[in-house]
Each structure stands twice: as C-alpha cells, then as structure tokens.
Amino acid sequence: MPAPASVPPVAAKEEWQPPPVAEVLAAYAGRVKDSATAMRGAARVRDSLNRARTAAAQRRAAQRTARRTPKSA
Image (cartoon, rainbow, N blue to C red; front, side, top):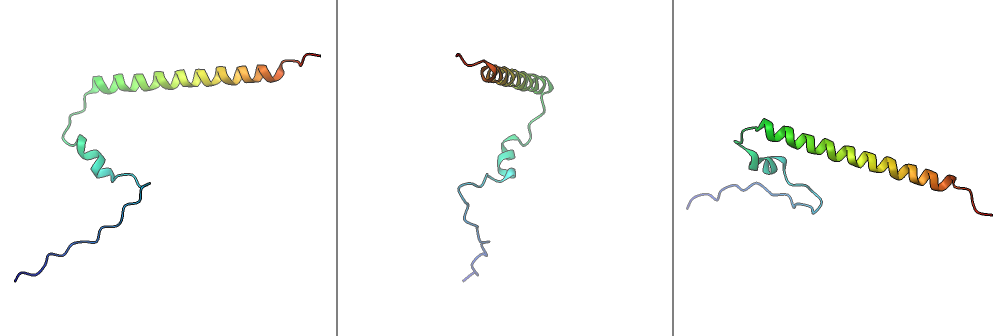
C-alpha cells in the first residue's frame, strides 16, 4: 500500500481577505501590452479624476456660499 500523499494545511479564508495576487494576475499572464489602449485608458482615468475634482470644488464653493449667506431678518 503506497504512503498517503502529504497535503499542506489550507488556512480557512476569511470573508474580508482579497484573493491572492497571483490568482488575480493569472488572467493577464502572457498578454502583450497594447500601448494605444493603455494610453486611452490612462486618458479616461485622468479625465474622470479631473471631472470629480471639479465637481468637488463646485460643491465646496456652493456650501461655502450657503454658509455665508446672511440670514433674513
């Protein structure tokens, strides 16, 4: 009878733990970097961040103005 194979203990995975990096990146293994797509993606992210920054600044300005408005007597 052959000896049973040694199985390493597997730690119980907590719900809040992210998946292992190697597991996440495995989907991208062997892919070639497409510079045009990467540049387009980076431009979209920059545009999105700029829009969010502008919206936040407008929101803060509106709140500031609302706080400074004199109360009606």
